[in-house]
Length: 354
Image (cartoon, rainbow, N blue to C red; front, side, top):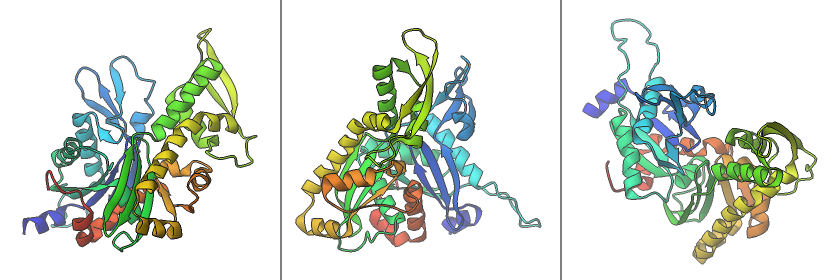
């Protein structure tokens, strides 16, 4: 009875709580929030000054009294209080819907049921931290689902069938690799090497090769603009990166090509490919046969790196496909299980709070 009361006043929510970006889907309404997982705080009072896009604009530009924080690292909560404040902000934001007027036009009281995607390799303590943060932020129930499972559901793959499905979800903090069958993960590997490490690889490359210090934001922009994992005949593509010359300390601009960015990214991408090969080696033969026929599916922001599907296909000798709208696969999977509570009971992470 109480559950029905709260359903009347709140929306069920699916959240992809990512290291780099957070996406929020509201049941029946679709994805309403896509914001960077960044919070700006006053250093002394710890007062939240900005969240999301506004906070990201402040990165590297704040005065001494303000700091910008990324409250998740490698897919797990590193700053509990800031994560709670950010979740509370997003929950209230999706409930700020104007009423139609009249006697029964009451303000929304956010007490939603929440499904959150988490990395498959997190510990019990890390899982509990996510649930506690959701409940402290105002959720009446918080359920967790592993990101590769959520991505597979969001990609409309037959996760409940007795067939092998391989999903590789490359986000900002982790690369999640899983073989799924009968609503569960048979083999999985969580690699804390993903988008952030790719950005870091470009920063290190520029420092070592050209004696130039660039910011993570500049590295990310170069990766998105001309980054690739496989030669695509477009090595003449180039972009200008700006930073500081380490020898003189003065500002410096440099034109860098797609082949150089690929050279910088290759060691990190090779780690992800090796992890995929390791999972395939551990996969039971019956499921491996299904994967040979069905192929490997990529999701997450990392799936958008040019030629990554070709690189993985070449190394594994398997067909590789990129999921439709890979950036939203996880949050769409969270939304699917909100619509299908039987499926949620099968795929949610058990243990801890309920």
